[in-house]
Image (cartoon, rainbow, N blue to C red; front, side, top):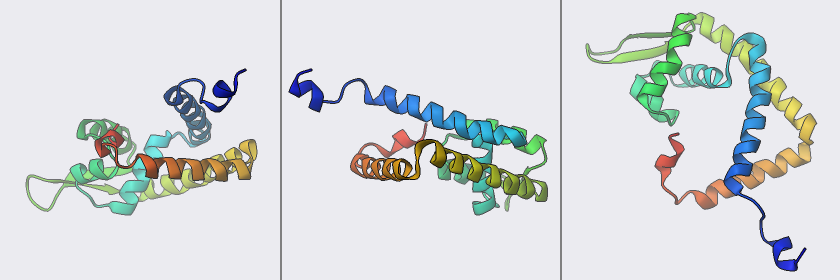
Length: 153
């Protein structure tokens, strides 16, 4: 192996990050599935708990997602009785709130989330997780001048 190839990154950073993200997401999803939730649903319950009552458009913006994705993601939570979408302050707006059952579900999910994080810490080692967090935070800071709308995947 030449000196140049030893000091130059090999492979596609995007592919490697996506592969890592899929593995990490599977780890968290596995833990959340024990209580019948997806990680995206936990995130939605957490945001509504923290920000609600809130208009759907504001919630979508806070979660960096488009309105149609939010509507699609809210439906199973509304059907389960964990989230309520009701008329807002004027006749044209809607308001999203978490129900008491939603608060309980989110509390249970928070315990599963912590178990997933502790499991990841154990699998990777706390030092490596700390180093990964630092690398991610630093990379995000360096990439921040890029188009912010890219965060709205």
